[in-house]
Image (cartoon, rainbow, N blue to C red; front, side, top):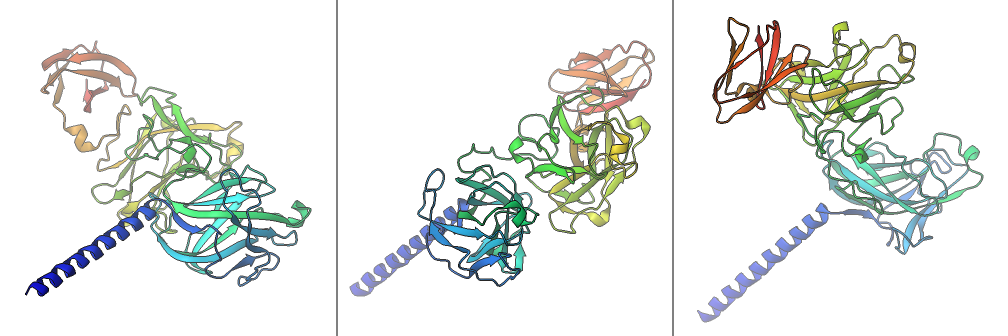
Length: 480
């Protein structure tokens, strides 16, 4: 019995040790996944096939080990002091899109438009030019990131890390690097063949670049009134990543946070600004990608946006979720002459056939095909936008308070009515005193007053019409 007891005790210890080792292994793998997933560091031989394409021939199966191989690091300094790197010998006689490719141990990556992953690649080139990266499950098939471009290379004959955002979930085991991706005849651009060095390819959640200031975490979400520091248009480092313009030439000043140009109809201090280029195409627009997704269904189907612009032209919105055909399509609203030169609240109902979960907002705030912008404008035009939300209410928001849902606006302890003398009697049934602001139908503030607990009489000085009454937790209309 004693031996059996000892054997059983020993067996339990072994089981506990194995479980502990398994737990440590799992935690270690989670830790690695949470930081960096190393694709290849060129310190060892390739694990699969490798070669080039379009350099010099257009042959997808070109396993060229002469023009792409592993060599000593030519500049072991700065952000890259490793011993070995990849070398792509870019031929003057090659095609403009020529690239190096290789297979690696397959990895599964979860990446979406709202929670992207970032592929980091270190490059050393004798010239500055566009770099393109593409990943697939295997050569020519499987999950495909598509061609992802990077125009941020500035360093010559030294190492610089470039970062590429991927938003497609899948298993990847093949990568191509197109390190001199300029659509022009190579022999006219280069006087001789050049060597381009590639190293330290890894994936993580961080878009920050080695050797450069860390980018602050992106925190933009809906509803959005562009106040504060964590909005859909901040920080500026995310221009072209989390927000940017369509079609027209993009500059970081095209879509930005701005001071509210007209505090009538919209009382916000800040808003968004889109620069409509007079020489741009008629359907130029911009996009924003919130941190979390937007669910559109029967109880949450109204898209709200306030717009201030000086031209009378349609507005178009499109919600997307990242897949090629998964979007609402163009939803166009025709503006009226009364809508220009002031803040106007637009409420757009998403059709039931398009109920879905979306992760991207595309806006076209001057969606007029003819006459083209160059015939309508002599200078670039500023279009302002604010107070974006999706909720259950079709009601227009007067005064631009509107980043609260309908239920939040109705959960008020304030009751108001007018008397025979044109005064407003307001009952404050809340727990504390509060501030009241009164606006006319255009959003111009007429007066402010303190609302004490109980019944308050506000003198409206013989005014007549529709007025907006606002407190810190609600806003409502009254007719005098």
